[in-house]
Length: 384
Image (tube, rainbow, N blue to C red; front, side, top):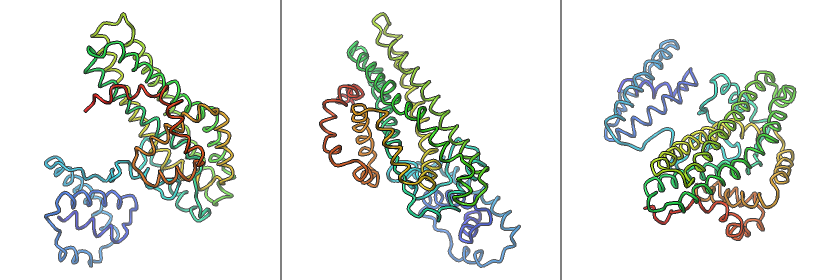
């Protein structure tokens, strides 16, 4: 109980170390939720709460309590099954992602980025928030396209698993469906997103977030430090894109090999197993990218880039994709948003997408989307 009490003391007194408090709060939440039947004594807590601890002692106790809380929480988690987690919420997505929705809030939970880089950007976002009270993010197509790709990756994994356990019955028809499904995911959906990112979006990000003079004029911060941090993040976004493309290439090669008529049953099973693993790798990388982008990139654009500039870029993206391709992507984005179950995301979709386009989605699904992406749902009626 002692480390939990100390944690409560430090958190409620606004810990001297602002990075330690969120971790303590996370462990504290886990501990109390896992042990709802063991309330902490309010009297003991009150006694410690009223103690006038010196600063150095409080810092020392915070570190000790952090270690002990870690041991306690993980000790209980090994013995008890629980869905309670500081990294999840009722809607099933990362809190850092759900909190944003257009740059309205910031989170310190960012993976795959150096702590110093993360700290510089988060400090910039927090200290300069008052410079732009609207903080609206308008390039929603980028976010929704990402959600669509994540959804399709999970659908491909499901299809490959289905065929892996039912390959003898499904035969060539299932493998042809698999090849068509991978072709859509890799050569259409992913290719469309990556084409926009590599040809337009990455450079647009650099132009708007890596200009030290603009940053200094906007907020008065050290422009070089902030732009260097954003440059690291954009490089990481680009690196993730390249690695995702490599996974996509491997997926397509495995799907082609699996559908080859000269391939033996054992070889087909090996290829299908490879596709399951690669789909999982792709999904994991996409989730990591989404947390990175929405936690650091989305709020930065919303804060720094004027709405008119963002909307102008949106129009350029639509011209780059073309009318027919944009319609197919729109159906996939719609389905990803609705399957997410996030009401705020649905409301944003209805606000940003013109009424006529929304009315046409079901027609475009039948005439354009299903002929391309429909094979991702092959055999879904057989999956319990």
